[in-house]
Image 1 (cartoon, rainbow, N blue to C red):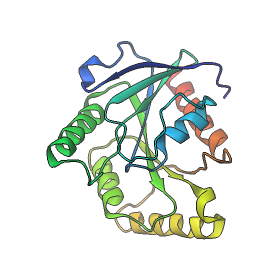
Image 2: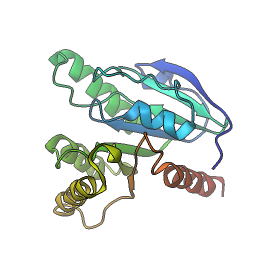
Image 3: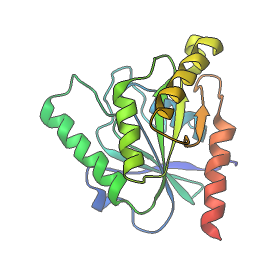
Length: 200
């Protein structure tokens, strides 16, 4: 898939104020500092499209970006950032769940997982919740360049094994690096494939 245009459309905290129409939406979520904004910029080829930050937990709103005037990338707030106050964390959790459960235009949720870490309870619980609620999702391992292939792939294999303790079959899994562009073609190809099925 060739990305011709990618533009910011709107930020808001209320799913009811998301863009109208029936263009498909691909939402991205993960723990704070998982590399979400960097991945969105890498996918679109627009360095400053999603604001990156060294400070975790910067995304506090639902951000919509229109791609090729045909589909949306949706940047959701990260989950599980402990330094936020309890009230803020609860508000964010409510906003995220509201979008995931109520937004009919969302055709796939990409759950980002940092490949540098061993399986994290918060990721496993979130993925389990998605499965229990029938949410269509894929898993995207990020930052593979940080550890080197062997260690990163070992962690990814551990994650898969941990999930297979509860899952009969895993959703699609992608391995990426925003630094060297790894996984870009695979992710965009997957989005293109879903878009094609929606047009039938």
